[in-house]
Image 1 (cartoon, helix red, strand yellow):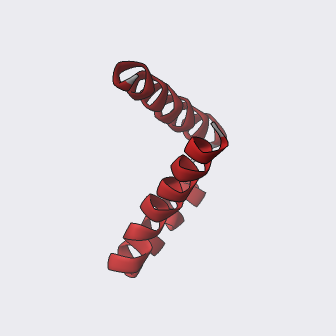
Image 2: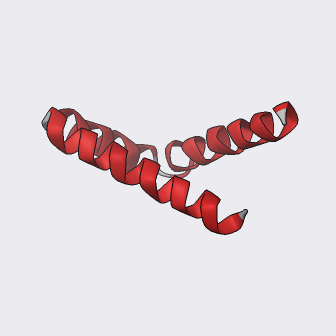
Length: 61
């Protein structure tokens, strides 16, 4: 189980690094836009992301 969690964490880090590596200017603009968003919008985006990930895990397993 620990091996699977570490593999998932490593893949998450790889995915997080793709955009800054390929298009750093676009990444900066995206982060600047996130800073301007209110807390409620960010929470809803986070919740949507978590639900999407949980749904994917459900269908894949």
